[in-house]
Length: 269
Image 1 (spheres, rainbow, N blue to C red):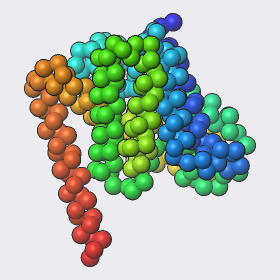
Image 2 (image 1 turned 180 degrees about the vertical axis):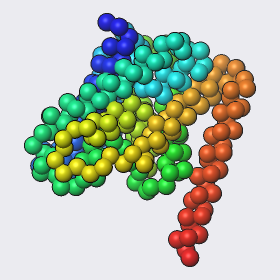
Image 3 (image 1 turned 120 degrees about the vertical axis):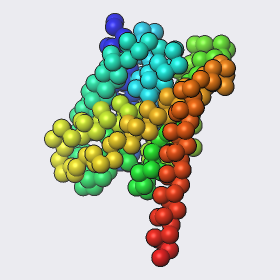
């Protein structure tokens, strides 16, 4: 099996199980309807674990463009392979979302809430504030990539890595996922969002492309910074790239804070 196909299949499995649990919780007359955030977080962790088991022996199971780009940025992955990995991840995510559509076929008609239907496929903010939403995705993915590098550096986790990675996803979901639904993976959000746009879902609304850049840009920035940060402090390689990305992240944090201050002033007045 090629690495491209391994990433495609692994990401497809991840999305089938991850998007599938959201469908079960959100869609009307599903037996899992209303089961809540804890179930969603646990299932996403298991989804990632199964995706890693499916493809890890062939491609190391990145399953996430932010991980691929983060590892490439510190020399842990060859740039020449990046296009094949990311294209496999995106295609796999689209296919996985289409499969979930068919799994819950009668339930789209039963569900009248357009936002709930979109929420099955794509992430969205609890409070729409683009700078703050971007920060949330940066932080979540920063923790993800740092966590993956921590796990990889510990030999005692060998053989358990997929399960440990799944637990990392659960922890991020429960701790950091509330503001934006924690995409922390551009393919996980963009692939299903494309599926939502093209599928003949009964009574669906728009695919909220105005927000779509946030779960792409945030994870990419956070993933690259997580890898560079780890490389700087744990491998002792604090080059120019670390300082450049650090400044970019600080500017984004400052912009988000200032934006929220202005929103607070307008709310009071």
